Length: 247
Image (cartoon, rainbow, N blue to C red; front, side, top):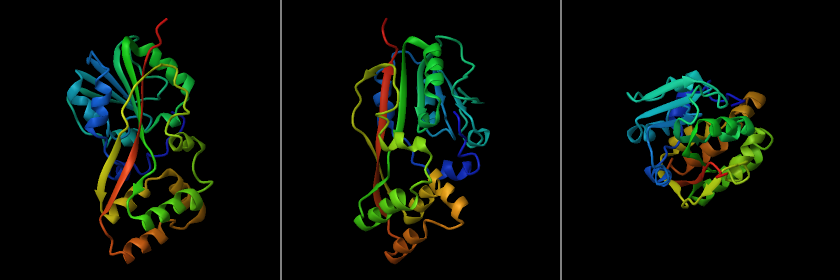
């Protein structure tokens, strides 16, 4: 991983980001026949690690950010390790499942995939997981969020963000692709939860440092005028699964 954008706000990130669903895990595990060891790369504060732990004898969760890992939950069979995506310290052909949740767009693809191919067992699986731009049912709030994302924060997103906007379909993926279902994460959040989530956006943080202005001001006022309602929303799930190409 080349960038560490989340150490400074690691606790807020852990508290405000959406949680992954068991439906995502089920779609992945359908292709994983052996479950001795999983590597959760770019694990952050363990949002996906906690789903893996009950299903594998051992889990290694790595991240560039030691601060993020400090907020991860404890499991007896999980080892947390500060490490880059390109150097896992794992033995060759030892891993049944490699997972990357909402992180691969920050990686050096070539170096990471070299490491994945080294550590995966012959029948092992790589799962690239993520979620796209938040979608709110309230049309007026959705329009304000659209303006925030595409207009106010234009030029403040890291270039790697485009891979999420393109639903991970344009990342290199040198594996035998496997079929996955269409999934979404559905929630009902308070207005405060939505604002807390938006505050974790890296583009928003870049904007604040450059402009010394809160770009959420207009959205806060809109939500306050609506009485700070509960909001129905969803995130499209980004999921790509693959196995080593057969020679």
